[in-house]
Length: 177
Image (cartoon, rainbow, N blue to C red):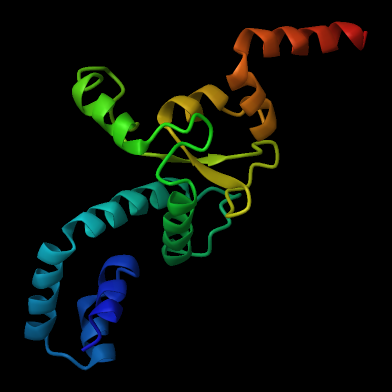
């Protein structure tokens, strides 16, 4: 039996047990045994899938969400996470550091329902698209800080020198009058 296919059908595609049994020609007992074994052997990966699924469900009903299904979103997320080496796209802070801060320092704060992990962030929020081309992974702090105010390039400049960036933007406004 192809355990990778079983894993994908069960945890990534979230197919029903009867469907998996039929497609893979296995009994319900075999299904239960495989599922239990994978729960133990791949628990860290399953935890990540569940977290990414939550991100997906939080965005999937938005009009401008362009990922076809969870499978495509999950594959994008994993690839993007690897490209970014598990770090925030903007400030380059490692997700492990952010998680540790939320677990040990910020755990008693009001807003701790998110923030421990990298979040989906639109590089250019003016076109509002949640797509593979327009999204990156950002830490809670950069995601909130950037908001829908800056595009990717403005925010990177802003991070270098916040006060200088805002002053230059103000000067541009005054110069255009």
